[in-house]
Image (cartoon, rainbow, N blue to C red):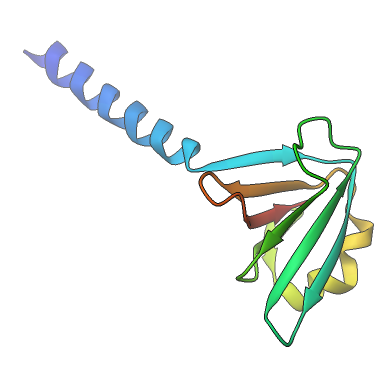
Length: 104
């Protein structure tokens, strides 16, 4: 019985973690160029040197979360610093393919 409970606990944890991973897609790029339009609040991230990418650019309607060197930074800081990003990773929503997060 203990083994069954242990197995069930592990299985539910793995299933939950797997479901969380499938929600977004991570794309590793060589570099990016970001355009943000304050009037509409929307933006575009152009990807360069990306073998995994199906498109040359990805859009966002809400400002994506930005993680630099393990810490989250404001979007405004990112707009002044994105050109320093070496091999950034963009995370896309699985269904809409819009940018949710950028990590570098």
